[in-house]
Image (cartoon, rainbow over all chains, first blue to last red; front, top):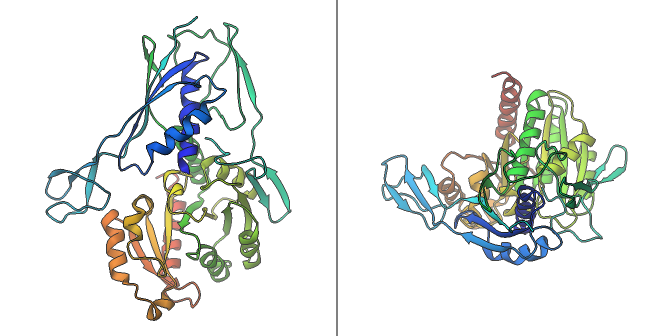
Length: 112
Length: 294
């Protein structure tokens, strides 16, 4: 259920950045290893946005796949989860991609 | 941060001071802005501004919020979704740092023994360390009462139906608890291995309590929590002879998601292994007291 709290934060940030104008699109990046279900965000979004300047906005979610670099051997590889080791056996990994939890941009309606 | 996550009208978040019996709702007054162009909008209580923000200026698209760069009608934000919680958590962290307070965020699945471990720790160390507790639960003050009976000052935070503590709730709890400089604040999070992993509270370290009655693969099933934790305490090891639990495998799984993680084995019931936990606590306490001007 942390997706509800995250959705509140998304709507709040969008509304703050819009400075009173109507938001028609919100673009997010939610990595596949971030531990956040995009379906749940979508499920909460319309309800949370209701009555705010974000009501009715389109939700665009990019979902980057997991990627990591091994600090041992330097190999870069796809990570379907957070516990797959490098082929050399290394577990000390730099996570390059897949943990994103970002609100990238909002699109505003033209001023009336 | 949205402090009323998942909450209905019956179960509002609140803090209860168990020393005075006073219960305070975690709410902020709604506030309303009127912009120069006549637009009027109000923020519900949970919609807090995390940055100082002047509302008396003309709103046009070029005005300088340092977090927004606007191109046409698209406003690029590139901000972490949890930026506000993170900012509030940093405020809490600074508050702890300036007071040389060691703050720990204790997380686990329900029933892993967080409260029992705290009770035992308080009974064993209360003459040595100034221990203060923020006790998080969806409802009831049962755990808060247990902590108080063990001999520590405690404030119970009830989240209503919320599944995790956030930095705002902790700030409210601290305002009530008022831990003195040099103390140790133990924050017992909601029993949940998923949601609390994402919410920084401003703690120095996260301590995950893992009961050996759980499956060895919990770190793989709930990797975010074990990735975020600094220390795992395997609890209830007195039960190992009665279980098929492979402790070495569970430890390897914890290391697979977090190669840096520290591991301890204890029984809060029999006291076995608790010295290693107390030693860790003393070391962190000393480090927190030296961290201020480091």
